[in-house]
Length: 283
Image (tube, rainbow, N blue to C red):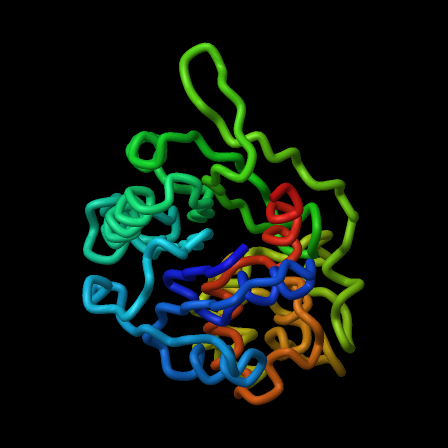
């Protein structure tokens, strides 16, 4: 593999997955605008080339013909069941079509380019169909709970491995083996609130979690589905930075240079590392 382009790169899960699998690449281009996401990426991989806002992609200094792989985690805010569900044409999620423009541009120069696109499992079927037809393949649906301690249902579109059915082309990535990792097994101290076997998916809003026991208790009493909490020394607390990293399959110290809330923002909005590694193994 020569060069990789990662759109909506976030904390660089794709780069970490490639590194863990010993897949060597020449250049890794990252499109990301969140400053502390870029800071974390450059901390772990100083050789990453930052190209900036995806809306300016036609101005990027890239030899497009050499791009062999494109990763995209286009915004899910307009597709998620937790949002207003404005759909794929919503203000944020419509950036998916910018990814498609870039992919088609590269395909014109390198027809063998591989891609991986991810989005939320609660996306409306109509929008999943629109995205699938735009990419020419129907996705595989994988829940991170097979490989981590959180419930995180996601669609993955890719041409790494596909199969032709009677009417369509579908992703042919098998489900990963269930490692049966429980929420209680990844916490650093205390006990699990409500004794859940798996925690709810961590979300970007975890970065706004209030940490005072009284505030958390009041919120739990009003809505137990809002966030994930742990009982520690007879007090409620939110997930700490190590626990958040573990829920996305990262090493405990991966986000050491960031505050807890900045780490929560990136991890909650990002990809699950072991799921991405599972998919990339089929290259």
